[in-house]
Amino acid sequence: MRVDTNAVGHDVGRIVQAVSLMMVASIVVAAVNGEFYAIPAFVVSAVVVAGLGTGLVRLYRDADPPEKREAMVTAATAWALTGLLGGLPFLLVAWTIQVDPLPAWTNTPPMDATTAVFLHPLDAVFESMSGFTGTGLTMAAVEEKLPRSLHWWRSFIEWVGGVGVIVLTVAILRRGGRSGSYTLYESEARSEKIHPSIVTTVQEIWKLFVGLTVGSIVLLVLAGTPLWDAINHGMTGIATGGFSVHADSIGHYGSPLIEYATVPIMVAGSIAFPIHYLIFKGELRNLYADLQTRWVFIWFTVGSLGLTGILYANGQYATLEETFRVSLFQFVSATSNTGFGSATIGGGTEQVWSAGATLLACLGMLTGAAAGSTVSGLKLIRVITLVKGTVWQIRGVFLPDNAIRYLKLGERRLSEKQAEREYTEATVVFVLWLTFLAIGVAVLLRVLSPAHPLEYVIFDVMSAQSNVGLDSGITGPGMPDTAKAMLIVNMWVGRLEIIPVAVLLGAVFQRFDLYR
Image (cartoon, rainbow, N blue to C red):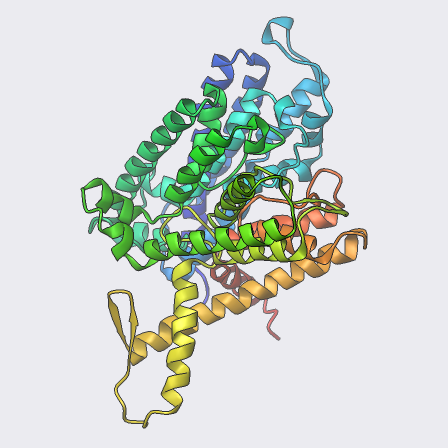
């Protein structure tokens, strides 16, 4: 069965139109901050992106609503195109500063090395893909030196990307017909519904997300964070994205209070939106009664204590409190896929954290937190399904063939057929996840200096594919272009949870008869 390219083209066009609206909104931020030189860059970007999106919508205006296959291809294509087009503001703002073609009143600053990086299109695309996928790895070596308009664009694309560009599109540029909207919504690795109507569900998610963002900003301000920093960190924190306005991330402040205040923001981003909805309605028991939410707290606690033990045994930090604070912050940051940093993990070729501490953080990045939240990774429900499903499969070997078996996952009691289906899906995602991870590690090992410790290479590839943003000193503008391109692919694959990418590749192979 071939993919209906008309449906894909139409829906990709609608998603691209939504991205153009984000660029238009960013013009206001540039003007408010007096960075008038950046306005033409956002205007040109918005016109180009809107023109492309509108052209696709008009060309395929008679397209039917997508089936699941088309929706998967749409998701993979749209996220790739969004990452590419989102690099335009980085490239054009850097070009404007470099050429300086505007009058003095536009306040064009002198070019510095950090912004100059984005004159290289691959670095601009890297930053954009990192933002939209909620990763937070950056090509900006000294983030303080970036213009505020680019600070905002980085935070804004992470904030929207945390919920999803398709979710944004369904909310403001809804697809005709209930089935079309829901199929697109599912293609972005979501299935949770707060209300029977998918459009109402999406609108409710955005209400919750905005409320949580405002609460995060207020909490950071109360902890002593400057307002501009709080706005950016509140947006990227609740979106579990991790872009910062400082090169040292949250560690820049040297404030234990700000570090502790950031932890509940990252935890909130790790909890599924339907659970937030129930909690706001007063049903607080869901904090422990819901299977995934319960395991979010268990895993954060166990992992933080385990990391504390390793770092304390290594004598890494001066006091037990500092060791615990760093461990809590970094493990929650890794497992929530946020990517904020409060301490140095590695210096590229220089080892800081031991292999044990680094790989424990990798395990947290791999699992992620709750499905239905803003996190990436495998998701805890899949990990639970794999573990309990494997035990269930082994026990089945010793039962008679006619035995009636069930698999209990939280409050759900799955029949044998349901259990087999969910276990198979989790296994396929896990295997494909490890395959792409291995490819990324192999490529980086090939192009990087052999002086980089293996665990640090694994860490950075895992950080990219789990959309985390922590790094061990490897990722940066000095990386070979091949390594940057590979991490872009890892970020794209990780955000889509593998399957849509596999479907897209299958569709391309089928279209060009490459299976022969």
